Image (cartoon, rainbow, N blue to C red):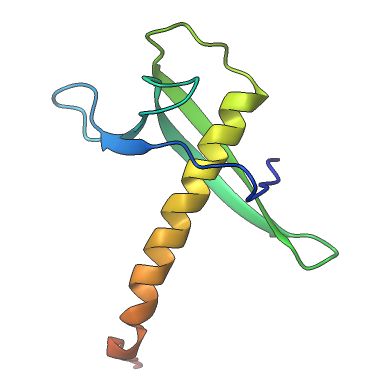
Length: 106
């Protein structure tokens, strides 16, 4: 379980597709100690704590580790910051389009 602290700076990243013919997207870390590491998120889950805080867990697959960086908690924290950034950015974009939804019932 990763508990994110927003005091940390999210590393620069970009979406990547490391091999031709591969339909699964990946994330490439573009700054910091883990620059060049390419990975994919697997299962992402959310849970609420007793203090009404949301925490999330995720699995991941390392696709490319060109500098042979250790796969440790620091890397997982960086992945968590990136995931949080992706979720925050996508939520704010979709929030604006909520008024366009229609409800279809049978």
